[in-house]
Image 1 (tube, rainbow, N blue to C red):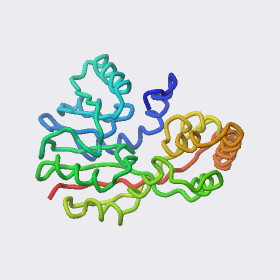
Image 2: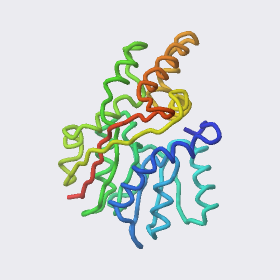
Image 3: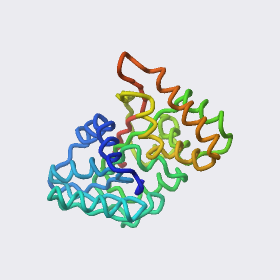
Image 4: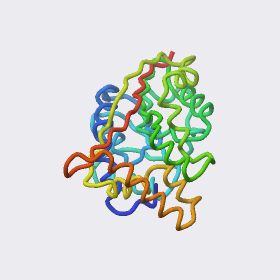
Length: 250
């Protein structure tokens, strides 16, 4: 994510704004809360929690992105700490945080068991957890399978969009509740959605890395064609279903 073209951060943040609203509203940051934002992305949730008075740490795996997040927080006049690190092996002490949050973030890590173990380890008793994950999308899955049968980076993230999987991973350590959500991606064209997701969505980026130029061109065209099926007049309104998980550390 450190190599996003100019403007893509802002576009992604705008697309995800309803989800960020939901996370911040439900987790209700207050003075004195210690928050950990796992795979902070654009840093929007991190900054919002800090504005509300929480003491916030964000973690991302790449130094260039962390540097950008630090710069954005400083420009906003916010005292936020951003660390370089891996959500599968968090560099924090046991029982360090009151709130754990992630907007389609930690779910892209490959080792779900390690992530779940780390969430439980750094959460204080009674800590609040809130995260979102895309639900499995049959149309996208079929599109990917036209070009590869190999596992793709981030594709397994949709497992976190299934209640039974979240219960298996986290139910022993957290009291859980679930809400279904639908985010409508509003764009002028399927091509505009391609321009966003071809550089921000791990499965799309991973597949592009495996394809030769001719295959990549066909994948590009098929992706745009799929999203054009959601056209309503002069706009493309594409629904993406997601699972919103809330938890309380036992």
